[in-house]
Image 1 (tube, rainbow, N blue to C red):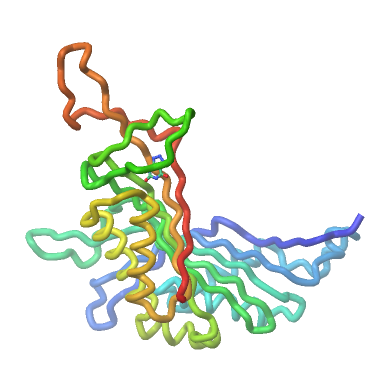
Image 2 (image 1 turned 120 degrees about the vertical axis):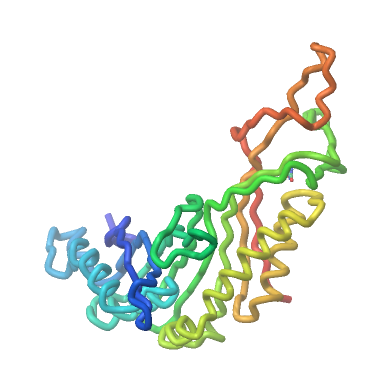
Length: 296
Ligand SMILES: O=c1[nH]c(=O)c2nn[nH]c2[nH]1
């Protein structure tokens, strides 16, 4: 037998970091994050010869994430993953690559007596802000950012008609349906234009990733609402196009959207006309529509 590939590390490393405003220490920002770091390198003998000498314990990987989260600025997550990538490649000469993912959970400040409170937050949804980095010792890297589990619904302004009809088709065309999905959007950064992970860190400080996230989230929510959607496919393509227009340093944008169906309940047996008022939530089975859009 031959070991074809391997990678290992720690998953689900969680922390909450409080960032205090230096000018007003009672004004806080918080980041609650879940981090995965997997290493690639000269670890074969641990698999094939039960020789653990090269293994950097996953416990050490966990310790490193927490120590670096304390020492380094974790805001924005793209800067932190770049810092972690550089750390593992620079510290262990036998590590040839790292695969890092970070999910940032939502904590949103809320107003009290008409003023946003300094250090009180509410969890407005299970929505995640994401970043992932695949980094090799050669210097090449793939950096992606995204939004996950942002659940949306519109109660009209969605259509689906003109589709292929065959002897297996029972779906009725419609110009007025409910549309609901859990947004999973990922935008890949142009690593040539970004240059290096050091530059990713300085771009992070300069606000590039925060403004891209804001643009992607606002584009998703506004197009979802404003477009009289011809299909999930058409709407997600338009979202991708708009994000590419707004964020020149992004090379591709992808969406993976479940179509979480709501079916009109037939009340005609009761002599009631159900004019798009009462629906049956039927998330399973769900449509699943995916696309990746790049530049010409
Ligand atoms: O937006 C939609 N796209 C589809 O491909 C599909 N298939 N059934 N309903 C659908 N709705």
